[in-house]
Amino acid sequence: MDNFIFQTARCIINEPGGTSRLGELATGLGMSKVLLVSDSGIVKAGLLEKALLGLRKSGLEPAVFSDVLADPPEANVLAALTLAREFGADGVIGFGGGSTMDVAKLVAFLSCSSQTLPEIYGVGMAQGPRLPLIQVPTTAGTGSEVTPIAIVTTGESEKKGVVSSQLLPDLALLDAELTTGLPPRVTAMTGIDAMVHAIEAYTSKIRKNPLSDSLARQGLKLLFENIQAVVDNGHNLEARSRMLLGAMLAGQAFANAPVGAVHALAYPIGGQYHVPHGLSNSLVLPHVMRFNLPTAAREYAELARELFDDLRSVSDLSAGARLISALEALMVAVQLETRLSQVGIEQSALPRLAESAMLQTRLLVNNPREVRYEDALHIYREAW
Image (cartoon, rainbow, N blue to C red; front, top):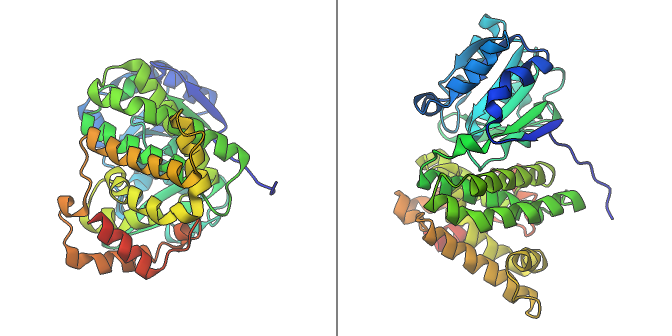
């Protein structure tokens, strides 16, 4: 067995309705002036009200930054950071989806640091203290509440990542009640995103390990078995809880066994065409998996056998192919687009997308099979 390091959030609380205790939890981390990072959709849905009430009841002074954008640009991060510094925040709470939690991580770190945002792009570049940090996910998708990763859009469409253990929160609060109002389409996209995390972690080339494998298997099973239920009935709290737990487990997995070519090929789709991240992943997932199948047949087969009981006696290639087909059928069942052409991508743009994907070297090195430009272009053409 290879040596490995496994890191995650210091504390994880899984408690439907737990948002009402947010003030108590923040006080326990020494917070008094709290920057609550969120987005306009969360505010309009009224989800912040219970959190703010709990903070004030505990004697804490909150300020709210509710302008987080999807795929946040650098300016968005810096605006939140400016508010944190002007307010004198001594703690940060990320309350929302992946983009919100990513911004919260960066604000918590940069508030204490002399480093600038451009200086911390890459792996292990962010070093030093940060403010106490709580993450409260409102979607079952990114798993950002337990990952040391924050993604920022730079320039027009390029994305860069900050990867550092300093971004892991002190506490992740899983309150499934916050997810019951998500529309079916958002539920589907974020759920598929979480499944991609589990699948790519399980096949990660460099840092795959026994802990990440166990979490990926369990996470994928929870997600696969409950996503249709929550798309059909968003108020099914038991299924919502299982999805939120599955997304968190998948997040822990890929935080330690990083994702690969699915994300590398999805990023240009999101960056250049503003396609939501989960949908970008789902559009290329089966095609990347077919490309990987000759190399990753055993891993895909092991995942397939977690989900289906009738694959014990078939070959790894056949079992892996069954997993890919099942995922394609699931995307249709939850009513997501399945072709790049359906989201406004022209066939003439595929070479440009392939060129952009090849810049994602941080991700491509984790893929079980080497991806060259010609391979990326072929995958895009298959997905188109």
